[in-house]
Length: 194
Ligand SMILES: CCCCCCCC/C=C\CCCCCCCC(=O)SCCNC(=O)CCNC(=O)[C@H](O)C(C)(C)COP(=O)(O)OP(=O)(O)OC[C@H]1O[C@@H](n2cnc3c(N)ncnc32)[C@H](O)[C@@H]1OP(=O)(O)O
Image: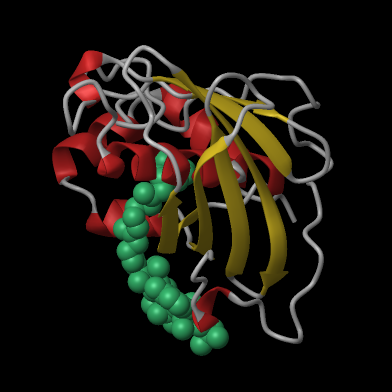
């Protein structure tokens, strides 16, 4: 049973998601939306270093190498870390819509334990869009991209303006991000050009 709640069911007026014409091509690495991000940032020493790759339509794949620092029980990945990997993978779908969005709701099923030293093979897709609400789902498999499902998630992301971060983030990091041309370029890549 997935246990999906009513708020994760797209409303009747939801539409099929549309891949942005300037989205990265299928097979292309998406890169980090922010170098210090715990999920995807290359400059974050404590992070998961998740790398996502564009798929067809509004879908992608990602890999998460489970290391000893990710343990909950001896030799097994912590459930919260697995939820983070799912959250980050789902958040990366924003690159394909070229929309800035944050997680509103994330529901996770843990089906199988995920051992340290394994790679979690993730895939995610946007299933529907209704105004600012973006509905998506993801799975994580062990033992290879076609292995058994260990974790799955359904999510609701909400579109926000870049002001969401500027208004709410700690000033030190916001100022550093705004004075980093690379970061400004990445933020712009999320915003739909009218
Ligand atoms: C150059 C400098 C700047 C650099 C910028 C860098 C670029 C960044 C690029 C990309 C970033 C991507 C980052 C991904 C990271 C991985 C993903 C995360 O972990 S994100 C963090 C965790 N999430 C949060 O912190 C959200 C906290 N929540 C909020 O801030 C608000 O609640 C927010 C924005 C989500 C919604 O607030 P409202 O006031 O804007 O809108 P309302 O009216 O409340 O909701 C809109 C609709 O959504 C529904 N909704 C909202 N939350 C819901 C929920 N939890 N469940 C069900 N429905 C929900 C509402 O019922 C409403 O629906 P109806 O339009 O009336 O039909």
